[in-house]
Image (tube, rainbow, N blue to C red; front, side):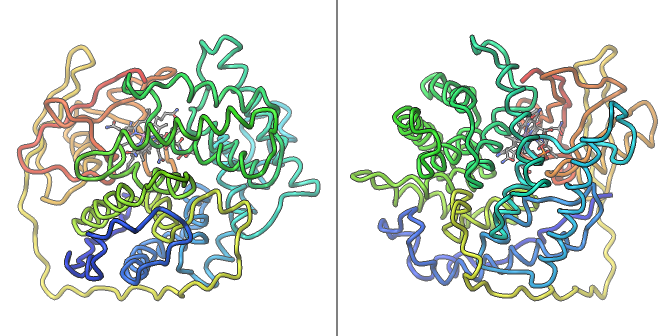
Length: 447
Ligand code: B12
């Protein structure tokens, strides 16, 4: 079973806002802004949550995003960081070697090859250590990523009617990763991402998620600053404005951009996107306040999202990897003290109704689990009871549900997790903890 991080963070809310942050309209998203003292305490606690993950060095658990998040944060894991990067290098370079010499023999060595997005995150990790890819190994990595992007460009097609094999999120991530290493992409490759953003009308709800838009915005900002595609400059500047508008329009009354979990990337993007005459301070501040309130409720147990949040709390974004500051002082993280509980409390049992309406015959069963169990525990219990099966795939966000009752997802389909009657969950099976009496539906949907 997955071990989860993120014990509830018990900051008194008045402490979080002790310096009057909540009311200051002057706090901008500018990276030049002084880091408020309250943030450094918070960052330290969040960084500590990442520490146990730095010890997980098996190929399935290595996550370049964690490394990038820490390097762009104000905290450091000292020797663990170097060891982690070393293992990332061993794994990714080995994968590339295998890819180069596989001769179609897919089964040798690593079971699952890194996706375009994972390779891109690895490139970001190298840059976070102030490395510029070069040499034979580096060139192979860059060529591989460029090939991936060319394939995606073709999959979308000249008429833009197709879809990337992965997603526009990974497309943006790959453009960004090559950009921070100053690797030029053909205008037509950048053009496909520009087109996706240009066609995404916020008035029409927008088909790109806030995360995807923010990732594209970070990629465009990098391209703008690096002058890598001068012929596209005007279009890039306009697209940055469109992304900004899309992200700002997605702000909820509480202050999040999209959902709580897309706010970290949205903030990273907005911090890079200061415009003369446009004050983003108040909106960004509201978002930050909403995030802090959510943290207070222990709402950030997912490592991947934490790794996207840490840079934002340090007023940094992935675009800073264009010129990373590897000498910036960062506070050393201390291993969290292990809690000793004297009494072993047996949690009350709760009942969760699990439904799979998409299949014939539909499945419906009430499952009893101890209070505090994850949805994954519910699925396991249902499987033990018989009549229910499911499968998962490891991902950087945790276990991703890929099949239910033997039904594997097809292209551009996924098993959506919904709290009945109609609320898609904001967390995956490992992180979400259902309450007593709740009904969870697994729906096969297209995306
Ligand atoms: C694209 C995307 C999707 C696509 C993935 C399909 C595809 N071919 O790309 C679709 C639309 C299907 C999807 C589904 C879901 N997603 Co989604 N997704 C993303 C997005 C925008 C990018 C992921 C990515 O490519 N990362 C980069 C690559 C390199 O990393 P990777 O690990 O190899 O990527 C894989 C996983 O991320 C996996 N995946 C995608 N979403 C999720 C969610 C969870 C919880 C898990 C474990 C895995 C997972 O699919 C990726 C492609 O294989 C992220 C945004 C973000 N900030 O990370 C949200 C994000 C990860 N998704 C999220 C959520 C909540 C979901 C759902 C649980 C929604 C739901 N109610 O059903 C489902 C997953 C259900 C399941 N079956 O387990 C949240 C997770 C928040 C959290 N607390 O961890 C994010 C952060 C969005 C957000 N801001 O709220 N997602």
